Structures are given as C-alpha cells and as structure tokens.
Image (cartoon, rainbow, N blue to C red; front, top):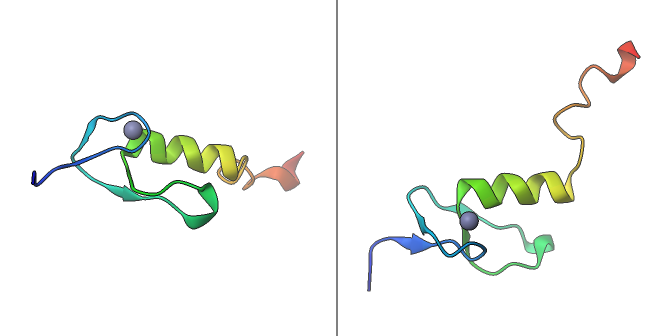
Length: 55
Ligand SMILES: [Zn+2]
C-alpha cells in the first residue's frame, strides 16, 4: 500500500488529491489538472459569468 494516490483519469501520482463529484460518474481520486478540467466540462462558464451584465 502506497501512501500516494493515483489520478483515476491520467494515472499520475497525486500530490494533492481532489475528490470527484458523484455526477461526474468517476469513482476515485483526481489530480488538480483533471479536476479543473472536469469542472470546466460540467460547469462551463462558471468562472467567467461574473461580468456578464456588462455586455
Ligand atoms: Zn489527472
């Protein structure tokens, strides 16, 4: 048993593990990269919605 987990998606050793969300259909640990990738896939525009009223 290693102390370090591996990313479910890319298989790389994860220094700082992120938990995947249920609705993503992924069981296991994600690395930061894959996590933010999934965030963007499932919640597109969440981060750039802030100034939309300025359009
Ligand atoms: Zn990964």
